[in-house]
Structure formats: structure tokens, C-alpha cells
Length: 171
Image 1 (tube, rainbow, N blue to C red):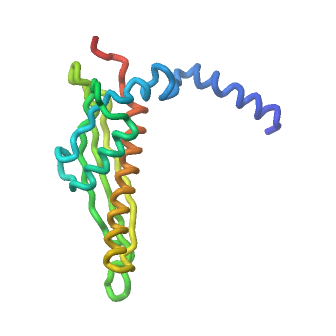
Image 2: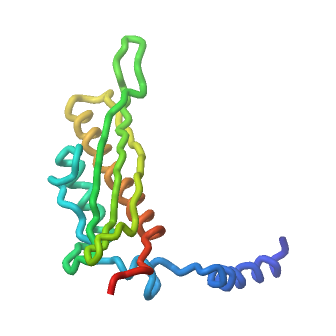
Image 3: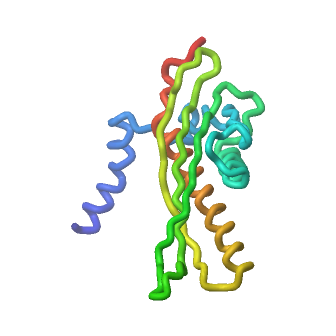
């Protein structure tokens, strides 16, 4: 592709995107600006099947991305489960590496009419080594859980911003 064709293509991309109905998430009137600070995230202690630390870190990360719902028009309900699986096993049957697998379900509900405007399930994993001292292994485990909650919060936020149907807002 020649340099002239590449420039023409790059200049045409915004027009092509606008023609197909694309709206940037954080543009005025976009989903991101419409939802920021208007979502009340479920309290960590109310999240079903979740450990206290995992639930706390998930909620903390979601509130950082979506804003705290001081003037909440929406409620974000969550479910969270995590499990650990051994990944690297020595000939002596000792596990030297673990994966932490997390699954989070979410449902964003408009408070004015109770309509669910976005919902879904996200799943991901992180890992940690169990070859160091007990303290190192415990620190690695905790860090893996914290990293997993960051990843799940990013996935939930991306799905909400990409799929939330704000068009039929109740008056």
C-alpha cells in the first residue's frame, strides 16, 4: 500500500466510523459519560459466593472505573467465584504453580423502572508460584487474587460501556 493510499485511508476512517453509527464511549452523550458516577456498585459483603478480600477488590476496582454512585440512577449487581488449580506438578507430586480462576456475573439495572440495561459473565485467570517460602507463596497468592479482580473489573466495565442500552431511559 502506498503512502498516499494509507493517508487517504486514515483520513477516511473517522467518516466511515461515523457513518456506521459509531459513537466514542467517552464523547459527550456517549455511554461512558452518561454512566460515570451514576452507578451504585453492590456492597462487597452482599456479593454471593465471594471471599471478603476478592469482593472488596472487585468493588474497589469497579468504583475506580465507573465512579462512585453518589447520585445513583443505576445499580450494579454482582456474583463472584474463584477457584485455585495446580498447574505445575513435580515428580514428587508437589504443586509449584497455581492458577486462580475467577468468574464474575453482572447485571446493570436502571433504578427508575427496574430494566436491566446490561448483563453478562466474564471469566479470566492469573497465576502464582509456590516455590518460595511460605510468606512468599502467601504474598504471591494474594497478589494473584488482586490482579484477577483488576482484570475482571476491566472486563465488566468494557462490557457495560459497550452494551448498555440507554436509549429507552424512563422519563
